[in-house]
Image (tube, rainbow, N blue to C red; front, side, top):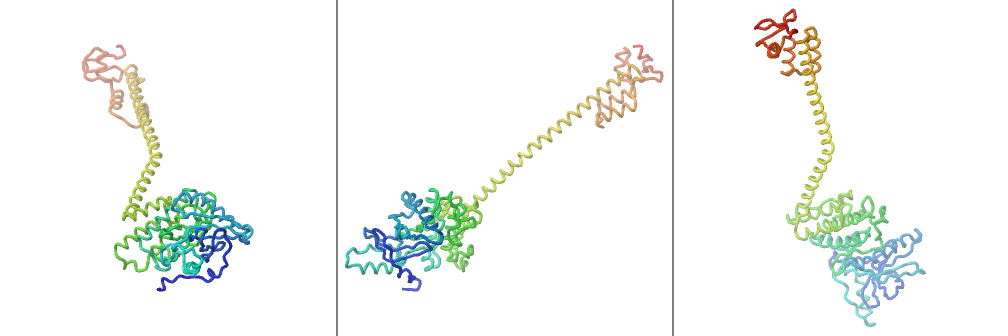
Length: 442
């Protein structure tokens, strides 16, 4: 057996005394945490199972104990209706000894990557059962990474799909896992599954929760679905690169020495897990379903990179349209105001122009009738100002004819004398080329 195939078997796992669990024969402790421990066991049907025991702690007045028990109830209500979640069986509590327990599926053996073989049932085969138990070690993702350093891109995609599907079922049920990490991912019949469901909690009850494991918990905590996506993104990073979680997002060593096809596959997967691990929750995948869809695209050898570029282009187009709409709400009223002001200004100019012409006509008639009431330089400047200093041909024609003389055809009509030109004489008489006529007499 090579060094990479060796199974670490801590002595404290072997030396622990098994507690009494109804209908279960506990053989060996295979895992332990702050408040819980996991035992390899045989149930009443002589089938292998894993039994987790959670003890009531004295330091926190039983808060962790009660929290995990509540999480187990929530999870149990959901797991029975979804095959992607690990089923929970045989839940019980020993109030005298201060612990509760539950049985769950046993992980495959890390050495064989297969489920443990069905144990013999005869009394004479006790030694064989003990031998199987002594050599068993659970196949977890952390054990897989310890042995192989990193996984193939295809394996990462397959495991990511299974885990994203489990998270999708949890989140749709209003729950979050809060502790997604390699040691909590086991393989059952070769399929990756989420274990250690005791930290599962309702989404609306843990918005400020900081449960979980350092490196796999975002800054805003683990109480929201995007926190689970963040943790799964870190898991995919570890599986794809073999790096430590603290190295994120550093690439694998000697990346340039890999074949071109493998580098492209890693680049595609990198887009998925880096999006999941974005510091801003709103920039991550909006749901586990979206993350699963992206992984399924990679599984079909489709490009997530091209999809992301198209999404960015669409988003940029939406932003531009939104900006144009926002600007239009400001510009259109402003344009209307300017146009209205120009129309009013033009109308006023036209009104002043008409008033000037009317005033000139009145003054012209007055001078024709009474010379002393005629046009003066002061009156001329007044009319120029009233016309806003805009002297068009009509105003000039009226003013000149008023100041310099009379309109010949008007005089001809009134005097009944054909005249080509007329003017006021110094004595106030009208002079024209056909003779003299006193205009005031007509």
